[in-house]
Length: 323
Image (cartoon, rainbow, N blue to C red; front, side, top):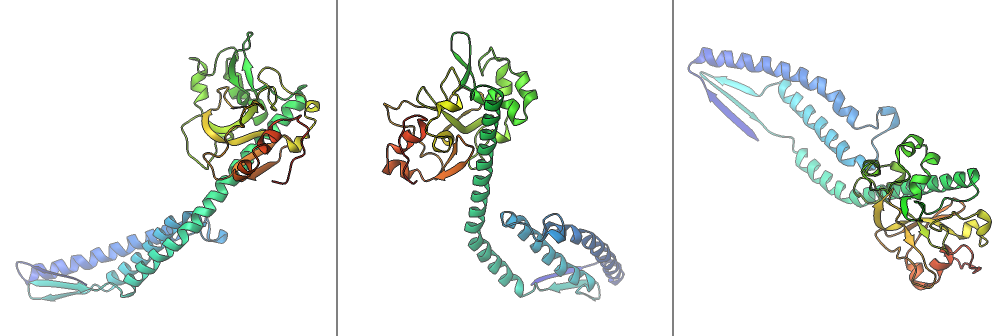
C-alpha cells in the first residue's frame, strides 16, 4: 500500500492541484493506450497469427506480459484517482493487487523450471545449424570434385610446397563466396598484410554456433596427411577412396578453433595416436565424404581406439563396426 499526503498554502491551491492531477491522469491514460499494442506485439512471433514467441525468447515475452499487467493496473488507478481533498491538503492511498505477489512468485518458479528446457532447445538448434554448415561444406567439396579431377588439397601452397592458405579458401567459390575468393592473393600466406584483413571476416558457414569464438575463427577442419582424405599438396581422386565415401571422414567440428583461412587442420599419421576429437563439444559432428553428417559420442573412440583411424584412412580396407 502506498500513501501520500500533500499540504498546500490554502484550499484554492489544493483545488487547483487536484484539477491538474486529473488532467495529468487523463494524459497518462492516453500514453498507456498507445504503449499497450507495442507490448502485446512483443508477446508474439512477429504477428499474433504466428503464435506466441518461441521458448528461447521466454525472457522477452515474460517482460512484455508483465508490462501489460502493470499498464492495466495503472490504467485502473488513473481512471479513478484515489485522491481526496480536505481543506488545504490532498491525500492519496492505493494498494497493489493481492495477486501481484503470487503472480511474481509463480512466474519466477515457472521461468526456473523452463530454463533447462529452453537451454536444450537452444543447444539442439545450434547443433542443427552446425550440422547444416558441415553439409554445405561437403556439398562444396563434391562440387569442386565435379569441376576438377580431384577433391581440393589440404592447402594452397607456393612453388616450393610451403602451405599458404587453407582449403577453406579454395572452396569459397563453391560456397557462393566468389567475390571474397577473388580478393585473396593466392601467392601470399593467410596472414600477409593483404590477406589478414580478409582472414578476419566471419563467415556463417565456417562458424559453429555451439561455442562463441573470435572473429574469423572456425572449428571445421579436415584430416590431412598421406593416409587421410586430404593430402597436403595434391587432392585425392574419388577413385582413391576404396573404403567408400560413406565410410570415410571428410571433416569434423572439434579441437581448438583456428583462423578459417589458415592451413591448419587435423594432422593424421596412422602410426601415431588419432587426433583428439573429445573437445570442446559433448558430441562430435563428423561429415563423411558422401555428404552425410553424423553426431558421434566421443566415448566410442575411447572404447575402440582404432575406429577413428579406420574412419580417417580412406584405403585401409577395415570393416567398420556399428557406432
